[in-house]
Image (cartoon, rainbow, N blue to C red; front, side, top):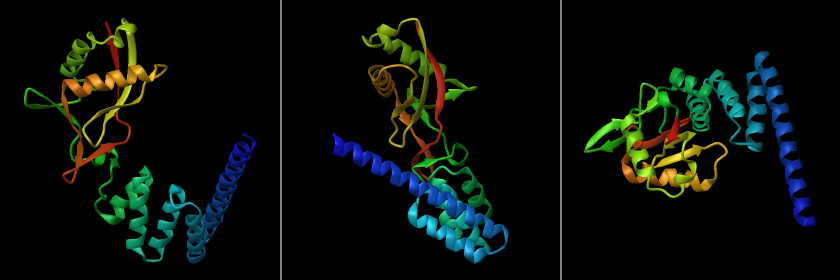
Length: 220
């Protein structure tokens, strides 16, 4: 037990130390950038990237220096990587300087070519209508949920569902406040059995967008 505790403490201290060093390098690099010492700023951001290759701020700032140094292709590559890490600022610069956004398993909602749908009686229908869960999908779910022994325990309760349709076309709950996993799994099971979902698409490929949907469900 003591060895495990010591290992956890060492790991935590190492992570904190790395974050402190990265923040310092970002600060120094930003100062050099503002003073138009672009090559020096580039070196500092490169050093930070070697510590953490997935740091969105480092990627964003390093790309800015590359653009200043006329390395547009490298800047775009870094911003595209930032986009994949959910950096909206990187998205805006990709669109401004790089043209099209590369495909990613997760994308911002405004970038997908088509939003998720579900199939009912051979028709593709939207998940939401007027910012509400499609009434047809709601009625199908509530009808089937009456057969569930798990959901029976939540009769006359309103539950907020935060969910998405993943890239494999499955209904997936992202959050369900103060409720057990048993209920989460049961709701997912029912939705995935009553209809077939179609995920959002970009350039003909299945994807999932960040955020998803948030709708209340009332078990009557």
